[in-house]
Length: 323
Ligand code: BTN
Image (tube, rainbow, N blue to C red):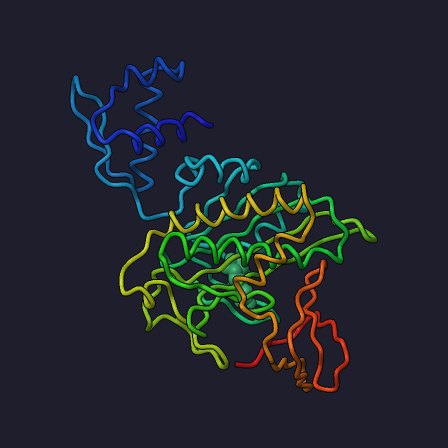
């Protein structure tokens, strides 16, 4: 933990005043260094009161997804061991993460932004990312897995995000194959997974999550099949973006460790529970073709398993499930 992160954590932990002198001694730095870090935190939006002989007191933490606040959570810190890069504005956190990964960024590096000007969705679709309203985050992973199993990481991210939404807000978020999160048939979040590999060995994977959290209705884009929504539009109240991001990272870490230790079975089981798709009759649009069938499950590589209307087993790798 950097000194600045430790000071931010001390501010966030203590409801009362804390002494700059004691903190300086604890961190083994000078009081001048503490006061310099405090000035940087204030410039980043922390409202901090200062009084002689009392020290410092946090009045208000900023509503921003700042690294030191994310790293204050042990689960998130364990997952994001490569560090966190925070942007006020960027084109796309997935594009940033890819560039960083190409330059050798470590496994577990997270890129997070308050706003994206060219956020990308699946199949080249845009992802509307207004400032301060949503979660726009991309994680660099260097997993020891063959390329054909990478789609499992999309399912894993969707499971983590659905569990986090349920935990933090109580809303019944569901998963729609392969990468959407819905609340009552309206789309609240999506996952964009990108990978680079050599022959069959994965070099790195970027999992990008976009979630409409406090996005007001008028900023939500029109969507053809499943209308866009936000957590705030569904719950009727503002939601803590940081809490949702941290909960998602916690759940991601849990499932990622389980995938590494026990394989994909429990993840697939959880995905099926949260998607409610097992045994359901669905239609999938793939380019000009519509496939009808009953869902049998999900395979170890993330493919959707169907029995089509002619009774033939099908493995589906891409497409849009029609409402
Ligand atoms: C989809 O539903 O099609 C996927 C949307 C993924 C959007 C996220 S926002 C963070 C990351 N950066 C991007 O440009 N895209 C992903």
